[in-house]
Image (cartoon, rainbow over all chains, first blue to last red; front, side):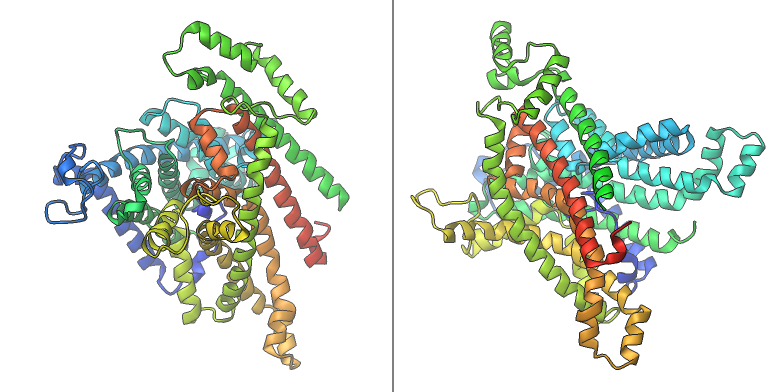
Length: 291
Length: 317
């Protein structure tokens, strides 16, 4: 991240954090991560139905008030209820970031398998293309492409999904090549199994732990990337708000010290990232060793 | 050695050419186009055609593509659509600000990371290392825009210690170096916090690993003091992975920089990229993509060369 955020979001290789976290224990790490993650998903998907205040109701007489009984998290400069905006923004963030992560996951796995199992010219071609894409941090490419297209939910999902897969693809490809020479794969080949069958039945099963761990990290990356894009005005477009754009609009009037407009959206993005990170690290510590 | 550098350069250049080609065609094949972002969506067909002719966008695309390389070979990166200035000189003006910003941040981050990493490696699994480890995990997950916004809130709006935006004050005619320095503080602190969170972790791991090696045990057995082992041997060996990561992280520091520069309105390359993306100024965007691609390659190469200096074993890999 953070590239920075040297985040893995920003694509940095994941550090061997497992041992540093040893004192917390793999199980506790995993449990904490999943708990925070579930809480955030709950806020995003159930929140708007439980707290039924119209996030877009403008009320100038209550503009820019701090938290109070009437407005639990205060109001923005238009007098809109900040809590309602946050919940609506959470939904807008998750509804793009989660499908994008899933799309990126499957693209990465398919690309990696194709490169690892296909003929060698295909491998060389695919890896050359991958190197070109990996020559730049994904956020830079995202900003570039986001400037080209009309931004709506579908295009954002496609954009995020088709840009954040390369590091997973490389991992799957390398793992495929490593597994390809092993006895059980050779045996399956001798028995006449097709490549597709080998990929589905043998390789994916062997790689499952790595895939799950990386899939978890990708969810965090996707939420970070979307929030960063939205913060820059190149993500979720107004009038729909998102965590990133809420933080940005708080920053616009920062001279008025509206801490209640900046702290909550920032903490939610942080929570989502730390949930993905803890869950991934916990999974890695528990299952990563079993190849 | 020279052969290694040459192969690496050739292979990376190919990657960059592919990348620029992708980016070029994506930019020009997308509907809409710069004429509309200059004139607005309600522009008439005639005025759009006029603008396209002026910007050289009416030529067939393949011709534009080769023209771009032709101009690059002559040291020209084209003209900005909106600012009507040569991209090269524009980039250079912003590049200087970015260079100052990153040089300070990277030097500061490296020094702090080394200190933290040493503590972490020496006190591995004891409370100092655990505290540092927890902080690293927390800061690692902090989004840069959040860190930057909180710093502005505390140190600029609340305590009024440092300016929150730009590189000079509006009313100051001849800003001195102090003005520039004051404007650099918050952006540098943001980038440093986030970079240290990532870097010090690698370094701590490396120090811990080196301390467990045989040569350390041998040195201790023959009576060398722990301090001179740490600073005489371990530090140098543990620096290798740090240098590699530092080389790899150039472009990522820049990525964080796009966000940080946009928060602080710091007129660097990241800020320029952000503004150009919002206004679809492709010549600038393509040039920045090219520039970052080159910086990435050079960063990696530089890291390998420095590692060769630090450790003869790494010289002929």
